[in-house]
Every structure is written in C-alpha cells, then in structure tokens.
Amino acid sequence: MRVRLSYSVELDEVPETISDLTDDELGRLSYCDHVTTEIVEQLKREDPEITSCLKKIDRVRRALAALDLRLADCESLLEGYVQAIKPQEPQQVVQSGYDVNVVTPDNAGDFGVQINETPAEDQQFDGEPK
Image 1 (cartoon, one colour):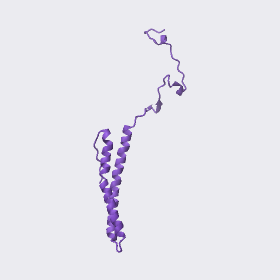
Image 2: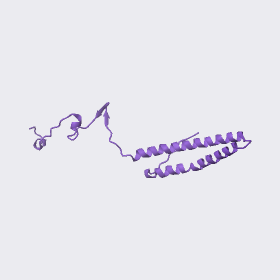
Image 3: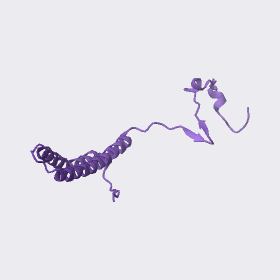
Image 4: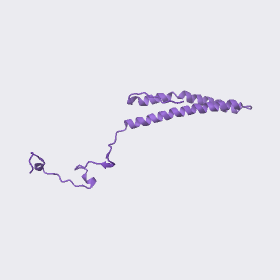
C-alpha cells in the first residue's frame, strides 16, 4: 500500500531535494539494468531457464513501476515548484458572476468610456455645494 508523505523545505531547497530523491533511484535503475542483462544472457543459452527468466522479468517490471512512481512524484513536485516561483499574474475580481474592472483615465478607452477630467478648482470640496 502506498502512502503519501509530506514535509517542508525552503523554496530554494526544492530542486536539490528533488535531485536527492531522483538520485536515490539510480540504484534501482542499475538493478534493472543488471537483471535485464542476466535475462538476455540466460535466454541466449542453449537450454535457457525460462521459469527463472519469468521471475526476473517480473522483478524488473516491479522495480521499474516503483521507479516510475517516484519519478511521477518528482515531476509533480517540480511542477509545483515552477508554479511557486512563477510571478503571479493579476487576477480579475469576480462578484455575483460578473467581471469587475476598474476604469481609470489611463484605460478608459479600452472600455469605450470617455472620462473628462475636472479642473482643479472644481475638485476642491469645502463642505458647501457650489
């Protein structure tokens, strides 16, 4: 049964941690290479031990499946890392199912709106209507 383990590291340590996880699998890959070579050599013999080859093939397949799972974990971690270091894009605010955009004098034309700026004397408010 597989279980998911989690622990935290600093963001800048993620690539090195994933490198360590991947490096741990080199032994498994070397094992698969070695056993596969044995299978090939055994099958080339005049009287190959087929039962032994079948067992070895099964062991290699299981080891490769475990390697694939570890590499999938590493891939997922790296994808999360890329998302974490990627600059955040501004997000639109959605209220009540409608997009809400802020119209400013700089972007008013994008919305088909014309904004007439008020002269400075009219902008001052002293509490009394003019």
